[in-house]
Length: 235
Image (cartoon, rainbow, N blue to C red; front, side, top):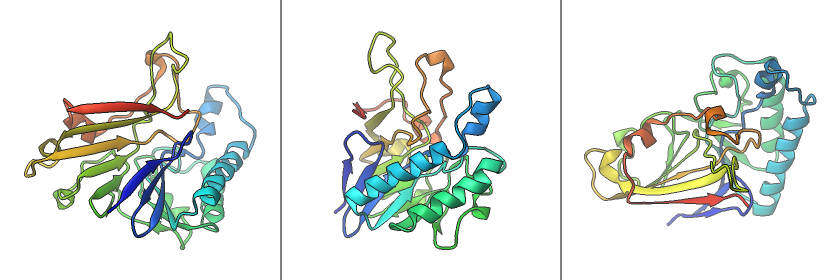
């Protein structure tokens, strides 16, 4: 049986059964290009080095058998930016020195196969199943072939808490909800748990709703009502 555990103060989860997997999503390497277009400049290679260091520290602490990346490793939607050509291979090369790496591509990972070293296990964007858990980015609907699962772990949505008079306003959060399984898998009954992991990229946040560009997931769009839900802060 698989057990999941949120790593305190980190946008990362451990999924442990026969093997121990570290789950991370939405790193968005190369996002500086879009920031530069808005005249916001960050030092060259500073964020990728920070990202590698932070993930390496988590790996050293948790000692997983593998790290599973739930998509959006890169940031540009349709092409590969200059930063991504340099930094995405650097990221994979450094992290794969520590443990096995599995990539489930997201909607921002167009053409990423050109950047992925041979030792990285890249699988279908529809996701992968570990026992009764579906791991997916969240931008596509799960196949009926996955209808036996009881839990979905996904990214894509970059969940952020909004309450302008709160100290938590604009901060990344975890979201977990339970809903009827037939909302996602029409031919199945029972309860389905969905966990949305916050983006690993710390710069994906906002303090005002109107400035927050949220992603849309067909999975969450199907969940009109949830029998229960909870929000967990990183800190």
